[in-house]
Length: 254
Image (cartoon, rainbow, N blue to C red; front, side):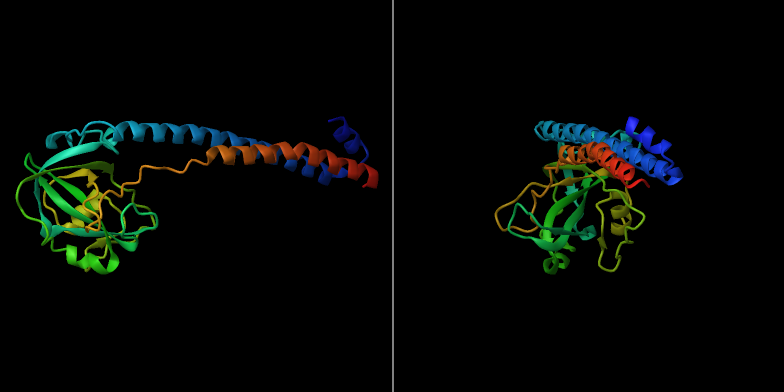
């Protein structure tokens, strides 16, 4: 600080102090970004722990249909659930995706096959039967591989995906959407009943079977500690760099 004061007294003017202030603000910004990444690290650690705990629980039932409009479905995200009812195969829809690290054999561009499942107790839950390659997807829209018999299924509940400002509108001609959002899927599939705000991912079937289930992502990248160290490192570099710059200014007499 004494270096700064002496430098200021030597008549370097406003530009000197503007640069010093800029560097100090930059240091504070780097420190804030590091602290933010530490907070994000805590949030991600809690998410990973919550998902692991929920995924290991025994299958449960969804709330009663009458409670759906006001129920909190967040605790059901990533939880195994059991449903009893009937598929409505003719109202299946596709959601575009691309699998780069699949658990099954199929990969690349393709679609999720989501079929309405009408519960015996009323209401509809969209069931994500799994991934199919793009060239095979249209064959699953008629649901000929499904029966209309009552069945009990178990899968992983997932909250609907968010629709962003730049999310394209559904392709009604191909009955294809871009996000697994139950309300959008309801309109695309022309379902005339109340729809749960979660969909259910089915587990993997026999090797090579399509649709390819068991693709629920339960592993999350957690690089926030590395990001925090990087930002704090930048903040730590500012004082020595500023001190060297001031020394150079003093020696140059500018």
